[in-house]
Each structure stands twice: as structure tokens, then as C-alpha cells.
Image 1 (cartoon, rainbow, N blue to C red):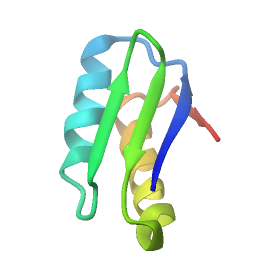
Image 2: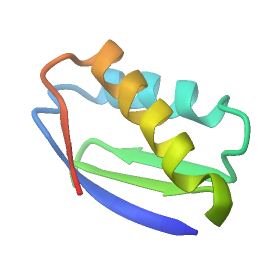
Image 3: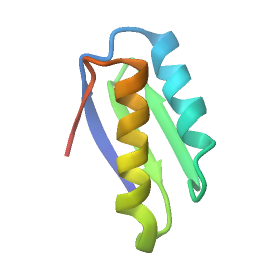
Image 4: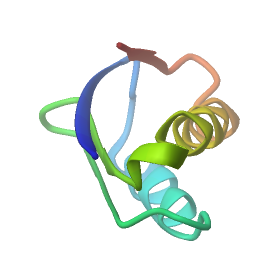
Length: 72
């Protein structure tokens, strides 16, 4: 499954790169892109584990950029 989410309060390209690199290392992630210019997160993961991986990715985003919100 591949889904794209809007990000709010993503303040810098460096933070976006940190998020992308950390999420890419999660077990089960097939693909990830965090785009600072469009303020979007695209996550690809197996259907049966998508919600679990999404929660882990959201936690990473909060750790890197506490003000950042993922809009579902």
C-alpha cells in the first residue's frame, strides 16, 4: 500500500531529510519520501503492516520536529 499525507508545520528541509532517512530504516518500509517543498509524506509498506509502520513513522516525525502534524 502506498499513501500520501499532508504535513503541517514542517519547518526545514534538513528536518525532512532526517525524517525520511529514519523512516526508511524501519522494518517493512518499501519506500518513503518526505518533501519539504510540497509538505508531503509518501509512505509505502505492506498492507497488513501499514498502520503499525505508519504509527512508527509518525513517532519519528514528532521526535525530529515536535510541531509537525501528519494530516490523514
